[in-house]
Length: 96
Image (cartoon, rainbow, N blue to C red; front, side):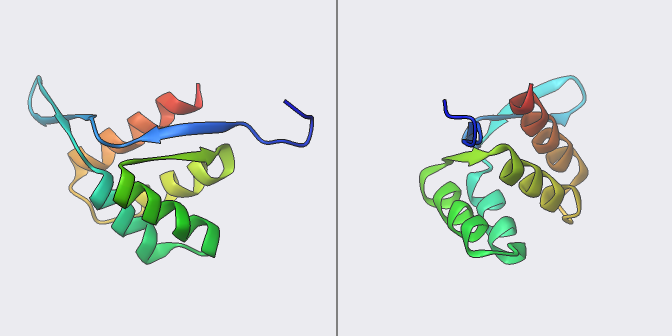
């Protein structure tokens, strides 16, 4: 990898582990939900393109910077708390 190239991360939102009920984890496809939310709040064309890719493919290669932007949009969204929490945890696990 060249020095100027930013690391990319595969963000797959087709099987996010969500605790819908206490101590019961369910895998959910949240790609359409996240794609729509990011599309509605995208501040630039690049992020909007990734939102569309997430919506249609369920996943996208994103830069660390874009991943931070997506997390921020989700964090500020009006999604149900348990879904928002699961998404933020899913994204934070990608940053490791």
